[in-house]
Length: 158
Image (cartoon, rainbow, N blue to C red; front, side, top):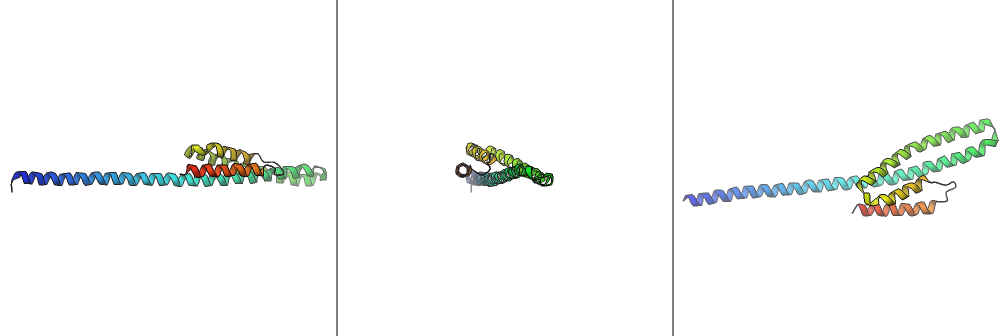
């Protein structure tokens, strides 16, 4: 065996080791990228679900507040005791709207950050949930806005 064969063998072994290292490095990079993409997708799905739930809770809270306000207005002529009971219910309804408002704004901000392409439809749905009439005359427009928001969120997940 001469030195040229030994050198060729060493070069081949070193090349194989380097090539294996490069392949492993690329494979690890792809795996990490896939994990990042899946974590981002998971966060987008969570943000979508959080937003839709928060908007629904906001609508329910606003409807409850408006119902309590209407009942309070109707109780004015029934005496001070009845009025005080309805005033307490109205104040409780006002307090109950604070958490859904905060949750809704937080969820909408998250959607704006993670899925900017769905922002306009989600804004429209959030506005429809905020602007409630008593009795509910805006249901059709709110349902249409919800459908558009859901469609844009699904498109943003692709």
